[in-house]
Length: 586
Image (spheres, rainbow, N blue to C red):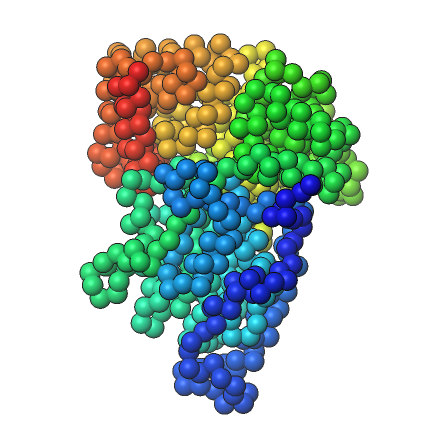
């Protein structure tokens, strides 16, 4: 019997409890009473009826755009340190926040834990119950805003075709519920509540819900989120702040999701597996059930399991890792889109290019294209996942290699797991960006170091780059990207050649004291330690890790040279402490 907490598809609030999500937010501004059109309150420059018409149109656009065929209501705990056993429904806690006097709610979670899905579901609930005069729900994908620290509400409204006059009218006479997703992905270090002057004199009137990956946080992360009291030298107001950390899925939630997955997404189930087959695999394969306590990984696992196990009956001898699930998922994605491209209508020059790409192996080209894009995103944008491409503005930049209009690039882009919203492009999930970036450092083995390439089309295999002193492994701090470290550690276990290269780099650091070698050696130690094949007790290892931290913080110029931001810097310092403590306790 399915848990009553669980539902499939968009939720349709029916009880007064759900209505409370927006009832609390009715504005208290005195001039919200009825008025004659054309008789405008002081300070207004536009008829309120025009604003309401635009809001109704925007509301319908957001409701019609909502699609989550299978949704797991998130559960959370009070903070990072709290036990998973103390979890509570996150929607209930959010409703409590919206009904309170608090102004900022921080929602933390690992990559793929369901932060974005929760935000979209919350926006759907709020718009479903919206009535004239209620606070306006405004979903903001922070990485898609050029500078969220400065007037992000105006920027978001402008991007949705609200005029300046109507935006000013709403600023004067409306309250907002800001649902800000992806603080970490926008590489923020600013307190958005403070820099956007929320709830200050002549500022926007708003409550803010903001999401962030736990891996991004420093020890003093509250400074970035707690509201500051106006006129008191920025004194933090903890009484106006609330936080919650998304908890892993329970066994019951996993089972409910599997049942609905099989029922509602039959087009994804190409191997006629039943819910029992999936649950048998999840519970039989060692550590797999713990791995999929994350909604994104669970979805990915259900799509990949039949191929990952080669349709064999699940047994304890089958080893399915996170990287293996991603590899199978990507292979399936490329295969499906290859079939779609071969059957769709194309221009003659596109058809000729597609035939050429099919001859070289289009799936391999797609994987290489994605790896190179991920590499450029980390190199040119420091990992910020959203890439804006406007042809007349960016045609002579690196972005044109991936988003220009020529047939080859268009076909490769259509093949890969990318999404587009207007001029903004990104991988369909942050985890895929991290996965492909790890591939750009060292890709999945094909007879160890034999890898595909297509010199005719210009997309070379990135494999072997690890020994290139100009590559990301020698120039970028990977300690601030734990998911990338994890992918590489799993890949290393399957590749003796990769492990040899890592150990050689560590040895090289004993005689080569250049910054790039120290950086690469620290990355190598992190991967070897994550894989459990390197003891970080040796004194030189800890000195090496401390030294790279000193290099990164020594000057702003060096920080830029080593491709790391202030936020990543703080994360690195924390992880150095963690690795240091591991060395002392072993």
